[in-house]
Length: 353
Image 1 (cartoon, rainbow, N blue to C red):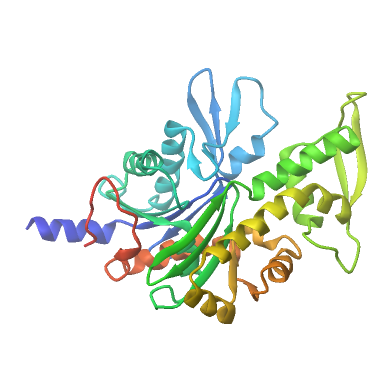
Image 2 (cartoon, helix red, strand yellow; image 1 turned 90 degrees about the vertical axis):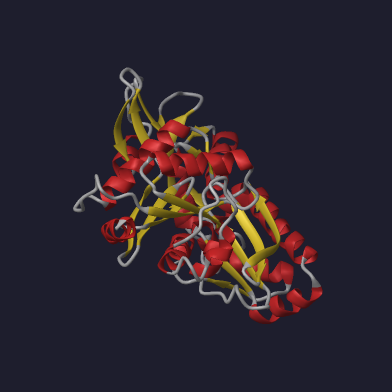
């Protein structure tokens, strides 16, 4: 009888795959696909402690709120920096998924992507936040493996697959074979660091104070890793640090390339280091199969070509790189028993069923 009740509740429950990213949180629902793709931002009234908005609505408030309302990002460099706010953000997304269900009866299973090499404390923080937000069982998957699964790489074969996942807070570079990571590197140089580079460049060169969203828009519109065939321009608007008045200037792709130079070099060097540490047999596979890139940062113009030139290995960008990790979590979620060997060991020692 108890098993029948459990099976009935499992049918009611909408199991969830989560890419809990520094910049965006994506939610995959079993049998339905990706249903949520919203910024990892929470707006809080500091007077009352009340959550005013989450996701898209909260992002609109960034830089536009009175002093007592703070729009905050509870994840930094891919890990939880504010436990309670992360928990409330997760609860909001779980409630959005279960809006039309008998949500008081259902406790979903969650498969969550986490950066490779996180500490036990950081792992526990993700698990506890997910459980407190209503998860019945929590399974953690390292992001490079989730991205490789999402990119449809044959990770369970005895062949080398090199994945470069450039997210918001971290870049994950890993060689995957037989369902596990052979060699990997996680660096805190990714999309957010590039935005920061553009803000600092504008401050130093043009004495102009930019907002984060403006910097991100410029990166997307004209950011590049190597010289382009056609020059691109964008208008940079901000506050003049000398006069304190509004100011706008026109910048070119060369300016932004100059701003991003150090971060791009760090990223390319990290990929080369992983290639150098890869066992020869697997490296032979990678030379034949190529490097697969995923994550929003992989869309920076010319970055794939630059990595290819520096490593002498063909580079491909996976289809829809922004959703690779959550698609990987979703594929695992659809067949938990078959893919259970990709889970990171956790304090709860859960067995898929």
